[in-house]
Length: 296
Image (cartoon, rainbow, N blue to C red; front, top):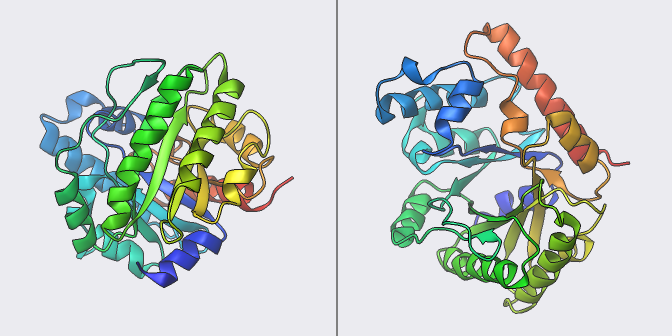
C-alpha cells in the first residue's frame, strides 16, 4: 500500500471523481456528452470515444489534485494511455489517487436488492490493478427495498469480495447503493448502517476499507461508520440527484465527501470549445469540492 496515497485519501480535502462508466452505462454517458449511438459503429469505437472524453477531463487545467484527490476508472481505462502514460500513472503523477472498478454489473433483483454478478476473473483483475499501481478498487450493489435478508446478503457479499481485495494489497471501496427513489429509504439506511457496522467490527486491525454510500436521508446517519477505525473514508454518490441537489444534501453531512459521476460531467459537451469545456468543468469541480469540504 502506498502510504502517501493512503494519507491523501484519508485526510485530504477534496473529492473522488467517478470516471468508471462501463459497457452498459457508456452509451448513456456519451449521449449526455453529445455523442449519439449512430455516431459509432461498434463497441471498440464507443470505448475509444469515451476514453477521449475521459482524457479531455483529466488533462483539463480544472482537474487538479488540490480539489480532486482520487479518480475511479473502468477496467479498460487502466490499459489505455493519456499523453503517453498509462492513465493510472498520469493521474498519480498529477497527485490524484487511481482506483479501479472491479464489479461485472448487477444480478437480477431478489429480496429487494441486486447483488453483484459473479466475477470469476477477479484474481486476474486485481493482479492487473497492481501492475498499473492502482491504490484501491470499487464495486457496486443496489438496494431498492427495506428487506433485511436482502440487505444482509448485499453487505456480506461486498465484504467477502473486499477481503480478497485487501489480501491483494489494495483498499476496497464498498458501494451498496440505496436507490434514491426507494419508498423506505430512511429505514433501508438504518438497516444498512447496522449491517455494515457488524461486518466492520469483524475485520482485523489491519484490514482497511472505504465506503461509497447514497447521501443519507437523515443527516450524519453514518457518523458511527465514519469514526470506525477500519474505515479510511466514506464517499457518497449522486445517485440520480442533480448536482445542485446532491451538493445541498451533502453539505448537511459532516465528514462525507463526494464521489460523483453524472453530477460531475453532466454539463460537459463534445462540441464545447476547450475554453467552454474547462469553464464548465471548473464550475462543477468547485461546487462539488465546496459541498465536500465546507459544511453547514
